[in-house]
Amino acid sequence: MKKLFPLVTADIALFTVHEGSLRVLLGKRANAPELGKWALPGGVLDPASDSDLDDTARRVLSSKIGVDVAFLDQVATFSGAARDPRGWSLSVLYYALLPRDQVPAVAGNKTEAVEWRDAFAPGSRLAFDHAKLVEAALTTLRSKVVSAALPLHLLPERFTLTELQRTCELILGHSLDKSVFRRRLKSEPSIVQLEGEFLYGAQRPAQLYRAAADFRF
Image (cartoon, rainbow, N blue to C red):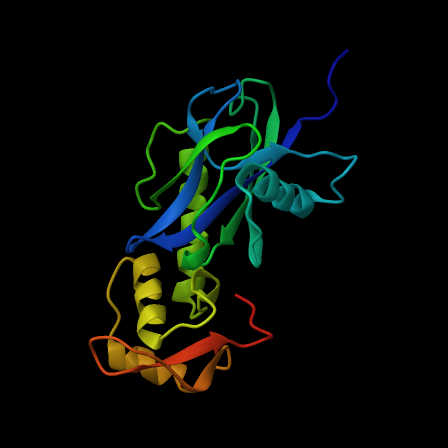
């Protein structure tokens, strides 16, 4: 019988800051097609259990990677007859942000292993068209930060302004002027100063902050 509908999937570019660089999570595929190749976490829409593709994306992250994220949003839709050997397919690409202190990820169903790859150079021989998908998700993330959105979902619950600036720099790929960055944050409602709480180290104590309760990236 002729199939009336395409293969519908959700793929997720999960970003974090790890070992001083912006990383994206890839999993080694345990099943055909593209057995043994590295790919973004993804899964097929299950009409019986998923009310929408957002549900599919969160189910994939939970079952295959074992993580829950505070931020998940759609990037774009990719479709075509040649992008998947199983037939005409449609994939909705999401991007998600994981705090650096939650980096440890455990491979789950249908995933042999996971790796945090450099987001700017994840590898050109990824499964399907996932190199293109990573690039699209990274472009969306950078565009948000360029437009002054703060990537607080990549930071631990308490953070310093230096950590926040460094995270922005890792996403943008260039340094930011410290004085300009700090002036911008003086009237920023997304961050809350934690009175009397500091990070102590070799330098003078650094004031700690948290994201506002109503923060949205």
